[in-house]
Amino acid sequence: SLSPFFAASQAPLAGTSKLLSRMSRWFRLVFSAAGTWSAAIEVTDWQKEVILKVEATAAELSQAALPKLLAKFDSPSFRDYLQECCPSVAQLPASELLERLNRHMEAAEIASGFPAVIDPAQMYPDSAGMSVDYGLNGSLFLNDWQAVLLHSTDPSKVWHNVTLQFTDAICDMERQMVSVGIFPHGCKGPRYAQNYSLGTCYSQAENVVQSYNCSEGKLTETIWLLNQNETGESWRSHTSRLRKSLSGRVPCPHGPPLSEVTSVSDGKCHGSAVQNNTDSWRMQDHAETYEYALKPFQDVGAPKFMEEADERPVYSLVNNNLIDQGSPIYGDVSAVFSSKFIAGGALLSPMDTGFVETTCVEHHDFPWAPPFNCSAYSHGKVLGTMKHHNHLFLINEDFWRNASSLRSIFMRMEGAWGSHPLPGLNFLNYFEAAVLGRLELPASVRFLIGEFPTLFGTDLGERLQLWARKSGRVLVWTLGPNNQPKAARPSASAPAFNFDLMTSARSFHCNQRILDPLVLADTTAAESLDTATDTSDFQKLWAQVAETRKAGSPTNTTMARYWDEFSKILPNLKVRPLGSEDCRKQLIQGECVGVTLQGQCVCYKASTSLLVV
Image (cartoon, rainbow, N blue to C red; front, side, top):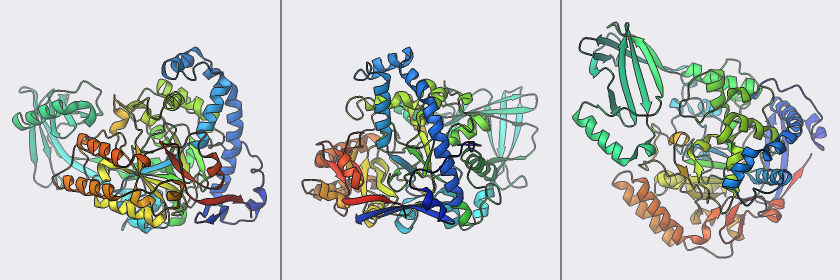
């Protein structure tokens, strides 16, 4: 997120000034390729100005932050952390740590996570604009504004929909009870009531617990939203039995509640908004215009034309933590963008701007987040780029403190990939990447990542394979955190967001990637491997998993066993993300997906160079 960062204005990068002066609404950085690669990014005039000013400002801020970052590396607390987590680098001078950090950033993936399937009529702010079908049948990687305008039958309803709930409450202090009435068809319709004992916890829905208290004509409802992978099977079984036998009574959670809602308990029906799309879209609009200084819409939070939506970014993250799934919180599919295609078009924020907007600007509670410090986020001095980012690490460190990306990066670089598992609280410490420009398909995508537990052996998984094959892009299967007890097939009504990760007390190795052999065979990347792959065992495993799903959603334990089998039948297709020293020769001319465990670079056959026209 950003604000008035337009203080500094310098000349554009060497060689681009002639280009910029000759373009009108769109300007293009062209990557002309021999063979099948051809890539280009187009940005609007407004985006061009933003990019150039961020580039200039970020260069100054990054250089000014250099002494402080070096001092941070030499601070006793950081050296103690390195000694504990990363003994191989603990004694290196600060200058060498900085060099390793910069090389790590050069190789880092920019990944955008999204659900395999979404309902455009039910989209909310911060939901991803993409789906498998949009990728398979579309020509652009969409931001969420574009997705609503392109695929919703009534965009105005999406922007402005308000979901109301009609209830009443009658408190009986003598009996220590409350009768809560719900009116599904409005206050003039029938009333459906449920009685609750005050101060007692209830659970009528999986993972949701609430209790009620009355005081001075007010009803306070306390709500907990439980993390599925924290409660454990024994707790879930226990509470399931209690729900059936004791009208939903369950033990009260020990952790902090999600929210406390106070309403009038006068026995009269009242309506209240449980979801106000207008406020939510306006909040996202504010982040994009104030934090990133992007072009305002004619109507705040409600664009009418694609030309307006084109000005806004695709939200992504810099995968500094080397997470196998790329961006696991926001869906069961991730697209890793072509670094050559989006070069210069990605603006980096040291934190997720949606989180900052919610907690630091709107001052809403987020009780599960690690401790954070809003004063670390100074509007106008926060954005960076993939080249200029020293200041981002310092801001992120001050904001997240012991959960910062600076610490988790060195931990994840230590030893073999994933040998140091990633704590749940570190899934939120990423740099946000707002990718500007016209993200043409397939050129803008380097490869796709599919979540094995939810998509393998499903029709959606087949459509993901088809999208990748049609695009000539590699598909990588990943086990991911595999933290959900049930690997349910995603649906439009229940997209596969995984917010539990942010609240988990567990740590996750997140180091499992295997290339899809059927898709690989239809890409030029297959030529970079020495041996052909027999796909018959892969197809048998697919059929076996599909058969298992017919009996219901398999458990995460079952899918972990299938993953182990997957690993054994295709050991030569297991890959890890690119490191700072990997595949340098190949990267001069083309794009690479990763490195096999045998040390082979998996790269597309291409010859790519930057042209200025």
